[in-house]
Length: 156
Image 1: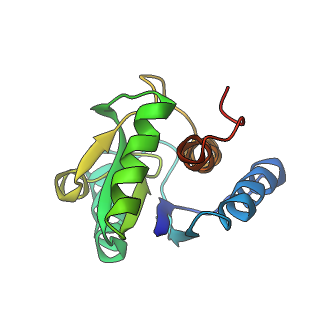
Image 2 (image 1 turned 135 degrees about the vertical axis):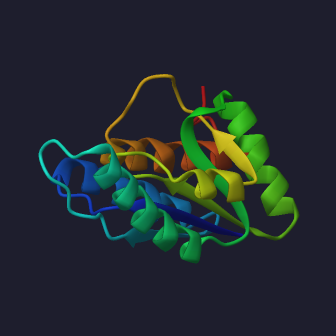
């Protein structure tokens, strides 16, 4: 099974990067996991609505080019599930011998066309998280999902 995380921007904080790398290393037991970073567009301090749309459009076009397999867009209006339900999503793809791509947007979210292309819209919370923190949360949940499938005591 192949797991891809397509996300906007780079992780600059070492503490997030360490955690992400740790979970990616742990995931090698279960799947081939990779992160695809999409260039974050430059923006001004207080961008206009048209500037925000331009940024969303450009980032969205780049995201669309990177999508493979079953696509799961992380967005606040998506469906919420618990870790066991998340594990079921991974299991379905694994049993199909497939590939899953999770998408994390940038500062202004995801272009509507990206959300429409997704097979599933998933929300981890109604709260807003920095996209670098969401990358860490997602990698941990993917790892947790695989350990649930395996019956490991990691998920208590």
